[in-house]
Image (cartoon, rainbow, N blue to C red; front, side):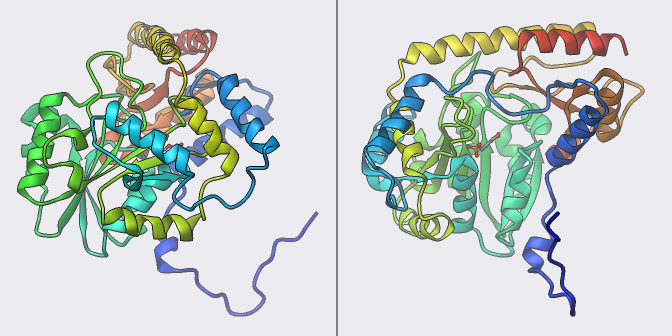
Amino acid sequence: MATVIRPTTRLLNPSQRIVQIGFSEIARVRDAIESQRQQGRRVLELHGGEPFFETPDAIKAAAKKSLDENKTRYPPAVGIGPLRDALARKITSKNNIAAARANVMVTNGGIHALYCSFQAMLDPGDEVLVLSPYWTPIRDLVALTGARLVEVSTAKAREQGFARALAAHATAATKLIYFNTPQNPTGFVVPRQQIEAVAGFAIERNLAVVADEAYEDLVFEGEHLSIASLPGMAERTLTCFTFSKSYSMTGWRVGYLAGPEPWMAHMSKLALYTSSGVSQPAQWAALRALDEDPQELVERRAEYRCRRDLLVNGLVQAGFQVESPAGAFYLFPRIPQPHHDSAKFADHLLERAQVSVVPGAAFGSEGEGHVRMTFSARPEVIEAAVAAMKAL
Ligand SMILES: Cc1ncc(COP(=O)(O)O)c(C=O)c1O
């Protein structure tokens, strides 16, 4: 077995910046599942964030064709021209954000779009308003800039109105709002009136917005509205998208973002120095994905909806208090009495029911008391998980 390199002299410290960043709670969940498997036990996996279907064949064929055509050289760092043009058309027509090629950059998945957005906009000491619970990596992506994440309770925002809730946490140091709809982990889709209120607040306080629309195609009730489409917002918003969830391309690593000049000129430096661009075959595949018959998405959405209802109904019967989400593919039920610690409850579900979930505390302080479960799983897995939870 190879030996691990370890210093024999005085240990050099890694940067303070990286030492303060933790590993995601999901890594801990994966380790716990692995340990169950090693003991020969099956695990009913509801912890993940992957679409239930495989990448469509036509998309895979486009990648193969690009290889046969030797499209294997360095791509432009900000993305191949035909994909940026197609994305500009998509963003203009579907998201109602007037975008040209210069406003679009292709990234290594949605997370890279977010990383570049925060790096481009934030200085040490800046504050970022984030509705909580929030997608786990956001805390670390913000921390890597030296800025500070300020949590704003989504539950309070839903009660009091989003602008009022954000205003209660804004200070002279507030620079930016991270705005995610449909939301991970709750599946909550922010209604139009509240998005308008957030936009009004951003304009009044002269704040930038990083919009995360990874689940734009997964809205079951209501509509998806891009905040940058509202008057006065395109010039202050970076909108981050991904092919991961809509086309089941999580492993291809293709995302993109849209934003105003001169921000995009700075973003292109980040694209160059963090990745020198996205793999060419993946970009040609993404271009083909944009040509998919929209009916395919409609059918997949209907399938997600059935699985959502199956899990929601099952959880209610198992005694959980759960909201049926209007978007994304997660449920965020309250953990039932007498449990109150989400990490301990997640361990309990894994050990006693063989069901894997993510503790709500992984999604910020507003997530404690809940767990996240995906309904992007096979119906047999959902049914078996419900039966196991009922039997607890
Ligand atoms: C809210 C949210 N934003 C962004 C992403 C990033 O997506 P990608 O897999 O393309 O990096 C995810 C992935 O789970 C997500 O849940």
